[in-house]
Length: 180
Length: 180
DNA sequence: TCGATATTTCAGAAAAGCCTGAAAGTTCGA
DNA sequence: TCGAACTTTCAGGCTTTTCTGAAATATCGA
Image (cartoon, rainbow over all chains, first blue to last red; front, side, top):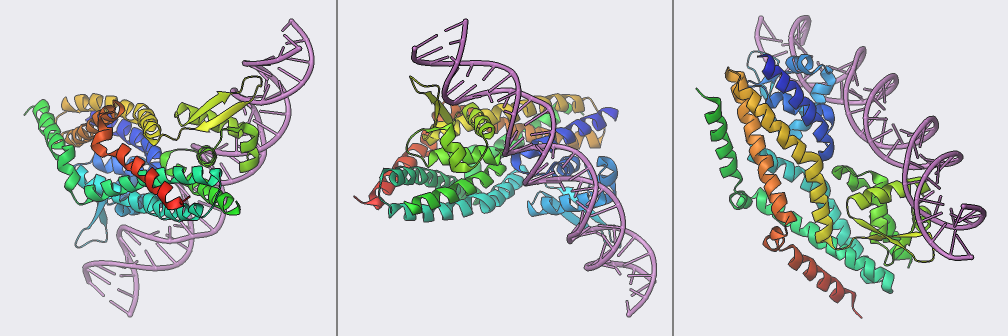
């Protein structure tokens, strides 16, 4: 049991620091890692104690994770308490992350790129021409990423990438290793 | 000419703020955007004036961009000056970004995930079991991303994704739009 | 090797972003 | 509707990250 707690602590810490690479605040990533390590849904109080953070931070982290679709809130009948449960279907989790990032990053970028290209097309001179060509290449790339994301969000990409197969196979492997 | 400068300013600003989503400091992203907007390689002094940042910041941004393989430094014979040129082949740029992120993020994560899974496999109890299964699913996913990245780094992915075709087509489109 | 011209480094300032904690808001049973 | 239990909000403090500017270092021609 001590080892499980050790692994949990290390996992929470690493996951939290990795969040930085993905624009996710440390506390938010830590809460997600913590929930992933729990077999049962947890109340806010358990998270506060387990991670040593404030009540407010837990609430904000939970809200953000809900926005990302990575955590579900369950309300217990006969109580005012909310229980938080991590989304463990990674296919769903990734789909939600892709959707959110697409909306936050690519969609606005794409719109502005197109406007700028139009504007530069009206200019004369080698400088404007070169600049416009480069923006055009970026636009094409982002546009491609955008349609790949669309395709993935529709579920068409999953089979191509073999995601389901791999994840399922990992689950089997894990079960086998653990023994009876 | 005024419009070109306007577009440049807006592009630099947006690119700089978008950098945050990718773990790239604003000043670094701004320098890259600036260089993309210039037809010719630029000296440090031009960047300092164009972006209104300090000499030291330009030097640090240039170093980081070089690490990412996004900027090349050219030394002019008969002078001590360094000229900075943006990598405009997006295939190369993305390859470099993927390689760097893989090394910084996935490789360490994968190693630790495997160690944790081993450790949890020795534990008994439903809690450890569930936790281990979830880590196993994450490991499978990261492992898949890792091998996709490897495949992309070897160049095999480019055709599959049609990247080259799309980028080239965008260039043609851009040229057509601009007229003679 | 020297001096002139550039670049790089880095300690400290500035900015940005995150978390805390208390107050306000919400929900539920009675 | 009321009070208790719980959650959410947000201004302010704090940590982390980023930028500045001057000193140190490097490079080139002579």
